[in-house]
Length: 292
Length: 204
Image (tube, rainbow over all chains, first blue to last red; front, top):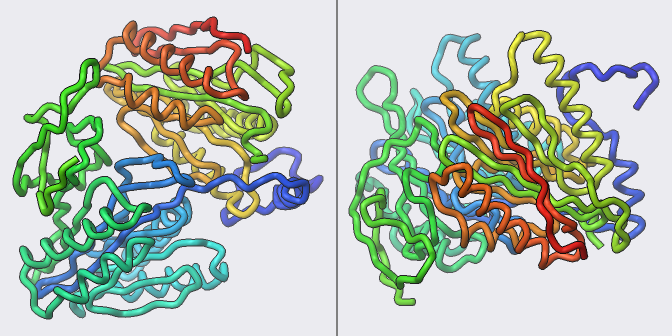
């Protein structure tokens, strides 16, 4: 620390590189870097006739260990724009939070609803600036005055504009589903079903993705303010862990749980182990029967 | 050798009915040599908020001092204590600030928020928050703690039962880890009182 900062004032923002020298010295001595939490992940987005649907799994890993069985990967950017994040969890959270604040300030400044392209430009600028060291791969989707938009953003700052997109370690599994089943002009039910199928494909075939499916639908309704998304709650995969299933997860007021279909399968009864009670299962969508 | 295995630690926090408990082991070592058996890993920020810091002990101490400093400034400015959610964001921001040269420290934050609802959270070493509704673990004994807590946890436990469960989970897990142990330190916090207990475990 420089001699002028004997008392540490609250920092002005941005990264601080004080400890880099010490950490490099340690890695020179053979000390391994810690494992950051990654969101191994399958994230998808698609454009349907009325707007955009985003989907994500909910597993966060730290090396080979699942450290969070129910994390939230769909981040709020603006009331009409949401962003799914894959890669290092700290990076995706900070980058989306930061751009979300910038968008809010921009809304105050201009008095207008945010556009998806604005969020895209802010994100790609930031990521390119750090040359890929901020490891955040994003699927950005939203509906603004110019219509529905879906973009992917890579950690080095390149972007794509697509009708359907997947990112993360499970992206190939999910893309296989999209490539075979996607068509233009899907309606909402078909869109949600396709997104759920794609995420489930990632969950079952990719080891870095798992647990539940989060789905977010963004549409525009009428000429007034766009309809705020519907966060359709979680559809649980058939691997019933010893979850505490009473509205588990984010606890945020954004979740509106709408039961799709409820069915429970008792796998086995064990002495002394707490099993979720049937009546507390919130919403289930069974796509595949698996026998254990 | 990973930097987290230099000093060794085990930390766990668990949620009960309108209460929470946070526990740690007591060993401080330098790789395989033990140099202290009464090391304090859990610190009180205020009566309803505790933070445990696992990982490299020097970074844990530095981070704790910075956090206390920021909290005291906050108290002077706002004339009240920080809410656990706010504190968790502060910890996350302080850690992410050092994204490319991080503190080798994994904090576990536990507190009672408004309406006496328990709040627990852990972050990785660069500040990615993980909010959980049941338990959070950190440290070299982390993998064993995941297993033990997963098996022993029940929702809505009363403070006495929570204490039993948490101490059993902690002692079982540190017995499977060479780098942590030598007993345990538990804080059980309810809206009306804070109970601090020391556990006697295997001293090896």
